[in-house]
Length: 253
Image 1 (cartoon, one colour):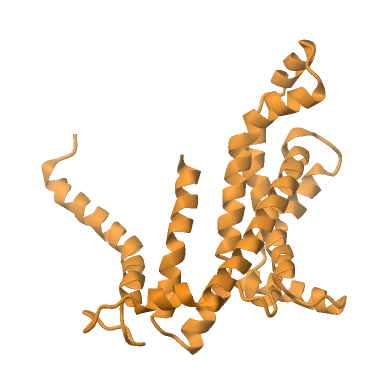
Image 2 (image 1 turned 90 degrees about the vertical axis):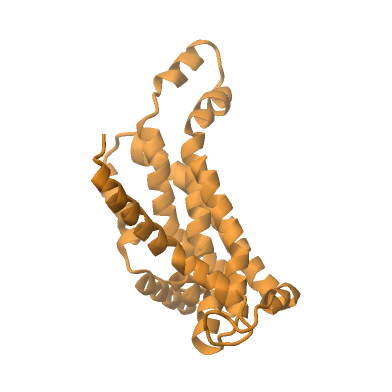
């Protein structure tokens, strides 16, 4: 049982942690309700003008569509590649497996600006004009290894004997994959997909180098904050929070 004199200290510690985590988010919400370019609190005038401007702006919808397109492509490709990579990574023992594992995780440890610059130079060297598709490829280079590791964790705890038992009972390979393997591995695949979406949706360094004229949401937020800040910027940021929180909740369920 906790001593009584420690209860206030615990409450203070928890309060400080929560303040550290959520005060920045609250600050963004408050900034979006201002009617001036400069943050001051309390506001002299509280207004929803920034949200009206965001909802009525073609640019706002365009940057969301670009980011969503990149994220969905990354999710689909990384789940397929990550699952196949996890099979080779965790299930089979073959010559060169150790080297494959090291090469697989190597892109994770590259600084993202360096990786983005390297990919941009590679694209331009072969005559590829950067756009949202090259941004998706750049994201995949960094995200696929992460998704592979996430799915591999599930593979390490998977008992192959279940498949052998199903085959002995007369099930076909396709039935085993559909009714035994995929249901057992689905939590890992789903977690990998959520990781892929969130990491791609919020990625700034790789998007800044590889997206070209197609401006994703993180690049737009950074550029407008640095060069032409207005309450529209935090308003757009607040509008995407429900999507991020929904994805996070799905990952916890």
